[in-house]
Amino acid sequence: MSQKLTLKDDIMFKAFFSRNEKYLKSFLSAIMGKEIKIKKVMHDARLEQLTKEMKYGILDLEVELEGGEIVNIEMQLKDNKNIEKRTTFYASKKIVEQLEPREDFAKLKRVIVIAILNYTLTDLPEYVTETVRVCRNHKDYEMNNLAKYYYIELEKFRKSNPNMKEKVNQWLSLIDMERGDLLEMAKKENKEVKKAAEDFDVLTGDEEIKRLAEIRLMSILEEKSALATAKEKGTKEGWKQGIAEGKKKGIEEGKKKGIEEGKKQGIEEGKKQGIEEGIKQGIAEGQKKGIEEGKKKGIEEGEKNKAIEIAKKMKQQGMSIKTIQEITNLDFEEIKKL
Image (tube, rainbow, N blue to C red):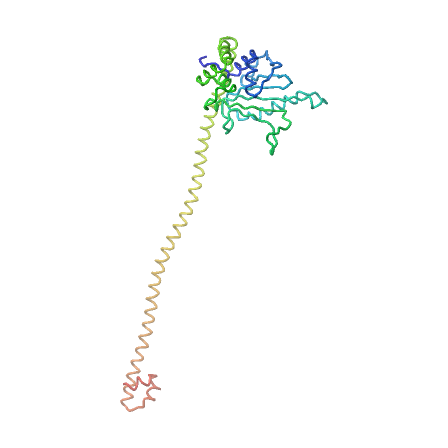
């Protein structure tokens, strides 16, 4: 297998630090910001069995400190979206397991979970986040912290410009191994880190450990490939369904808009035709009324002219204007002018 083995490989991490307690002590002291003493490291003789049967599972390193505190260190290469819930579940489980029924709660010891992540978990600027239970109004006051969590984000670490005089950064450069410049600075600043790097190179030559680590890595790669294939199939299926759904909705939307547009155009056309028809009918009606009105006026005008002719003849015959007025219904002044 051509891929280089590093301490980010959980089998390599577990094998290296469980075999070298002095390095583990220094690493934990740097992370926790205080000098710690290790009582024992929980060695797991079933390493190969775990590698074969739980190749997609989690391989943790568990340590008991002087004083009874339990430290669990987990290496997580890929983001499974549930790291905070899983670490909480693990810590709770370890707390519950400490007591037998009816035992005193005072015997409970703190459980510390250290999750080393090869990805970005939070939006916080720090790459080492310590999480404890505090009072909202008194954040310096810790409340019954039986569980404590450290989240180490290696992706943030390697993208930052860390102070390599700090021990925590020296050890993280060794674990990450992706920035050779940081690791070289760490070796110059810390002889123990330099010796640890040399011892790790020796470990990578251990054929049995190397074989188990490669099995583990291959399993992780297979899982990634399977997930990528499933995602691709899901994307294609979603695309296909999206087209069908979009087509259906497009037809419905087009039909709806077509009805609305047709209705609008129909109203406009109806209005236009109505105006034209109204004008046409108006002209016809006007012509009809004009004829009738003209006819009526013509008759009235003819009768008046006839009355004038009669009035003239009556006036010539010496009849009085009053008599002529009574017979023709003409105006007095009008008869007088004849």
